[in-house]
Length: 239
Image (cartoon, rainbow, N blue to C red; front, side, top):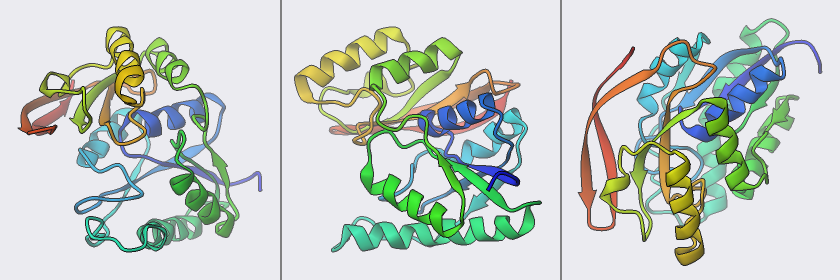
């Protein structure tokens, strides 16, 4: 398929934002961003701050489709494979609706997967069922090279959740800059912390970038619980 629209699987975090940015760079006609808002934990989706995807979409200038699934009950799972398949169902249903709505249907989807076979194989299978291509520009690339490329392009990335040994409360709200990446490389060597947080060590929010007309400003407090913490966003707006 060559005609038709592209959609971007979009959370507002760095990986999905980079996939979108690279797709736009390559001229893919991205006509919708699609954000899933998990209730509770999830095996398939980025969870924190997805409600800010609407602000990001406004800044980017692409319409947002929001998917509101029931609670995935991901904290009590006997079969992780079946759980991933079940979590994909509301996303696939939303994409089928878009496929019928958009001129020419859906030609392709962007995905921000880096190393997760669990997520990537499911997204690829879903795309096959939709007869769509997958554009995954982060897939199996060097993590530090990817992070450097994001910064070189002008991405402003904020850390909004941490859950790994070596990452303390001072990381919450921190901008992911070159110094932070150097520290993450050292933590990778010492504790195995993934430089891009691919193992769930940290989650991010892109507050500015070359694909955005206006940056996202935040007011927040931090919440720390022993070995993990979250940025509790109290207000957000476009500057």
